Amino acid sequence: MNNTLNLIVDELLWQKAFPKVAETAQTVFDRTLAFAAAKGKPFFLNLGKPLNINLSLGNDAEVHRLNRDFRNMDKPTNVLSFAAVDDEDFENALKQDNIIELGDIIIALETMQREANETGISLHDHFCHLLAHGILHLLGFDHQTDEEAEEMESCEIAILRQLNINNPYEE
Image (cartoon, rainbow, N blue to C red; front, side, top):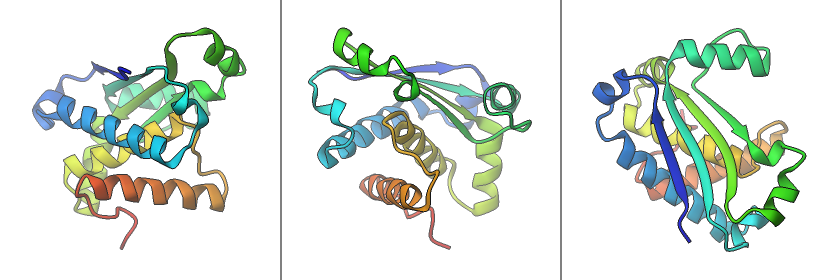
């Protein structure tokens, strides 16, 4: 089964800021999917169909526009996920399609850089956290309730631990 991470670099400054972003993104993608599959959640990971995710490496202006247009939040954010599991036709697509289209993730370079600087975390580690977080959203994980947030954070911590990255939630 060949899962695919489609990487789109919309902001050319990514190349300079993080030269190995493509390799890092692929590693996070593979580890996150393997972790979720081992956990047995979500069920569609065990259907034997390849998965497809689109990852856009963008900037604050682009993410600001998307955040405003789709979430009614008039500001940039670090990562946005547009999950196919949230679509009402997702169940039908699972039955009919040979590939499971999970959705789209976009990460804003400037916000990610600022947050990494403010928290003293390397750009690499913060990117890995944001991408794992985004992929988990595409898999149906959320953080709307305390219980959901606790589960999602514990998954992120475990995935990052496999990548030799410290718990981002520790003070």
